[in-house]
Amino acid sequence: MIARARLKDAQVLLRAKRFDGAYYLGGYAVEVALKARICRTLKWAGFPDAASEFQGLHSLKTHDLEILLRLSGAEATVKARRLAEWSAVLNWNPEKRYQPVGKLTPQQAMDMVTAAGDLMITNSTLRKAMRDIAARKGDFTLFAKIRRADAPGTWDLVVSAPWLEAGKLKATSELAELLSDSVGESSLHEFSRIQTVGADHPTVRFMLDNLSEEDGELRVQSMDLFGLQIEEAVIFRAKKPATIRPSNRRMEPTRR
Image 1 (tube, helix red, strand yellow):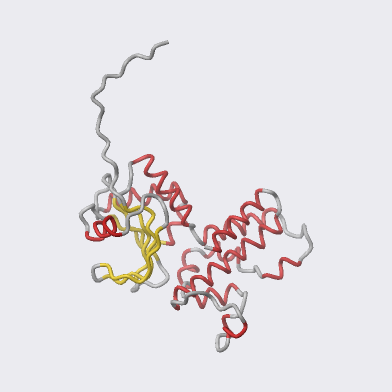
Image 2 (cartoon, one colour):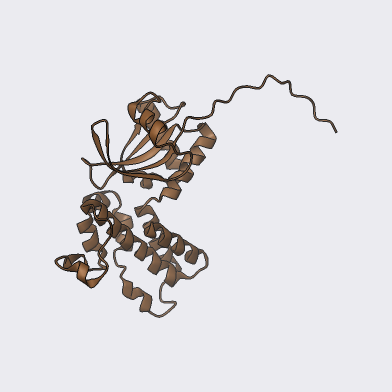
């Protein structure tokens, strides 16, 4: 995704103390992410590019983040859950790239890049969280984010693991706490809900049989999952955890 790539570029520039470039690319990442959201909402293959493609769509020919947020369908969610982060990026515009070098402060650049990252939890960040939790608790059977047709603009996180009690409040709370430790509590607000399911759940069985993935980003669009209309899914893992059998061998003392 272009937005995530630009965010990574902004983070590299920030670490290199190239604050003007970091600020500009951080804001640009937000713009691209909003345009991608508009495409998903309207079920477009891509955002209009050529002048002829904007015929009748002139309201979309803008770099104004406030307008793009309104058109994305995510305005209420973002302003209710991420108002501080949104306020930090709101004044960005592409003309910033023409201002004299050194005009932006390190703090302004840091605030922009941090807010941009908080506004869009990246798939790579979520995969890292999956790995970190698996290292502490054990492998997941299923780890996926799903966007339902009846909940446009929001994602569900659907998870199954032998160490999680499916559907139990305690299990969901434990998982939310582990995720919060890894990606930050505010990042969890991207998800409308976290659902823990058992290994025998039809969704888990279907994905294990048809959409197997060990550690990646398998994307699926427009599918009917047992009567549930799925607009989009990103499957990070759909694989049975390996059974670890205890060794019967005696441990021998190390020879010196």
